[in-house]
Amino acid sequence: MFAKPSTTDAIAMNKPTRYFATALAGIAFLIGGCGPKPAASTGIKALKLAFLTNNASSFWTIARKGCEDGVKAAGDTQLDFRIPATGSAAEQQQILDDLVSRGVDGIAVSPVDPANQTEALDRIAAQTLLITHDSDAPGSKRVCYIGTDNTAAGIEAGELIKQALPGGGKIMVFVGTLDAQNARERFAGVKQALSGSAIEVIDVRTDETDQVRAKTNVLDTLVTHPDVACLVGLWSYNGPAILSAVRESGKTGQVRIVCFDEEEQTLAGIAAGEIFGTVVQQPYEFGKQAIVLMARHLRGDKAAFPADGKLVVPTLRIQKENVAGFQTRLNTLLGKTAP
Image 1: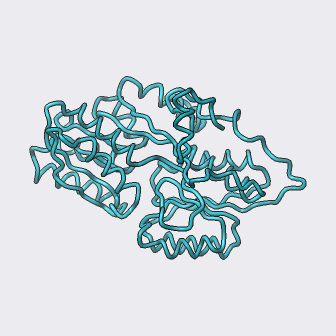
Image 2: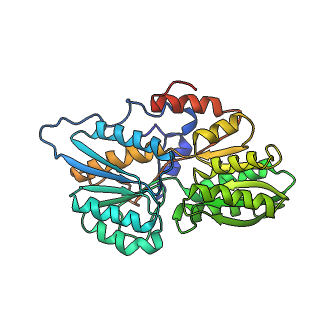
Image 3: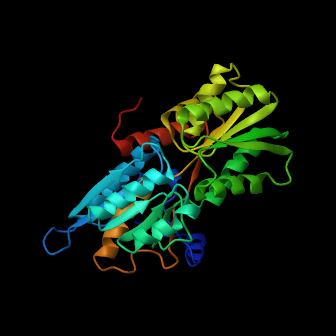
């Protein structure tokens, strides 16, 4: 699954954290080709593996495709893909308990509130193979984290904000919850990138994954802070929520938007010049690598996961000049025709 590294990559890959070497800009999304070959069903252990998200965003459609391709690559593997309806830590824990009761061999989860879920996650890890994806729980006994370096991704978003506001200005940040590890790290990265600039962070507004509230938060901000220059969304659905609110307020083109991920509305907004840019991840790889590596580990390959317990998948900035090519590759991955 790993491209032959350049000299720079080779040096980076000798560090404790092993980076996933496929850069998003030039990939064909690994459709059939360089992954492990499907194993024959005879003589290998049949597995039941689960992939649990942290909310119901369409972002996870791409991860699900990766999981399905991972099942094909692993062979003799059943997939239980779960999406919590409310996005709450309590509901997520109920699903985890249910999966264990069903006898799954391994679970990949994006923890909603890792600090307060650690004890419960450790209990799950004592009963089945547990890894995290998208958002980590580094204090838990999970075997590996597969996903974005979220601090670095936040820095990428911060660089987009500086590009959008070269003369400085005020920004408001929106996210589901700052309890999630990925949210905290992304926000920290944004602040790190903006340090010393003329850009001021007014505040952070959370919505607990309620997409109606996500839009209301933006509408309220546009009224209470008429001088806000840029609106920043840290989770995938925040981009479309921000765009909808800006349109409804009649401020399209007056307020810049920077966000995360590749929701259809986000990419359309970039193509139309309404969103300045987004930082995209590779959720396909979250899914595929989670399934393939859990299967390898469970079948005896104890070197399947990186020794330091982290497999970092790189991000890419998408703006108007490269959104069309990215959308084409994404459509190919998902088996869609061009819109």
